[in-house]
Image 1: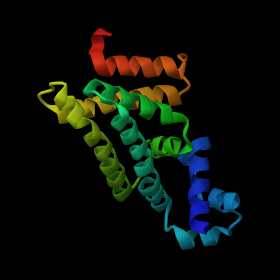
Image 2 (image 1 turned 90 degrees about the horizontal axis):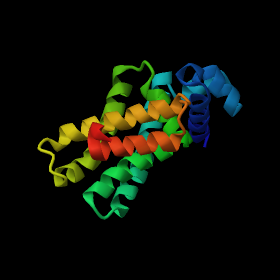
Image 3 (image 1 turned 30 degrees about the horizontal axis):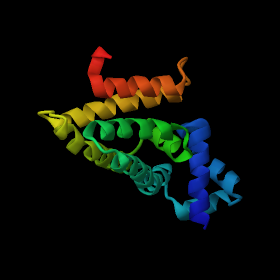
Length: 179
């Protein structure tokens, strides 16, 4: 239960203040634990980040995958892939993953994030192949780049409403730069 409380506190800290806010004193304060007790659960901030990725990213990816499974066409799967990811921007789990991916992490944590992202990109490869892409894996990575750019735009509190950014990202995904 303490470990779960620490992870929940870490999500809140990342969501509220980014990686700079994720400190052991802040975790201790949020959970009511002594600072030394936090070290009993995690050896470093990177270890907290790694565990958040292990716990949160699969749940988030499953939500994207479920949305894609409800779509009946390859084009619908692409749209669901983009829309669901952008709909999750306000979700604390997603906000934590965004904050994490922007931080300076050790090699182990970066590798876990890359692997999780790779699994997400792999979800869309088949739909892109069905749409006729000669290099669907490359197209999937580029599509994820569009999604990541839209996530950053929403996270920054851009002048456009999130729905406008989402629609633009879907249009980019389905029609390219022609709009």
